[in-house]
Length: 94
Image 1 (cartoon, one colour):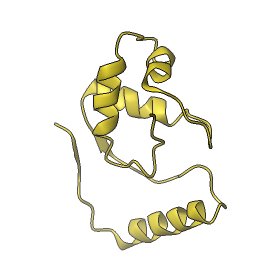
Image 2: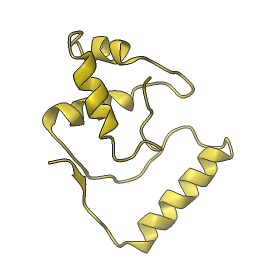
Image 3: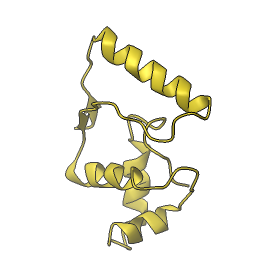
Image 4: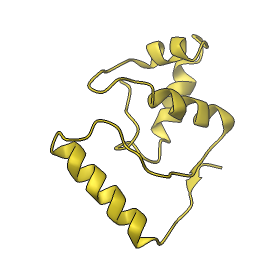
């Protein structure tokens, strides 16, 4: 199951808003939010790999597959990344 657990926490929302605003203002390059991601083990692995992409860098699904030491999983990585519940917080591959 791929879902994000809903949390009604005004402090967390305020923190997320501040970090997004700082990112869009060019003042923040890495988010530091306590996210509780839910997905398959493969999706979690793919999303963890997204966090390793340096700021400002773009990689392909093929490059991500090689980073994950699973070069045959290009399409599966594309599908996993398509289910990324926080694309603004986790980089996106092309």
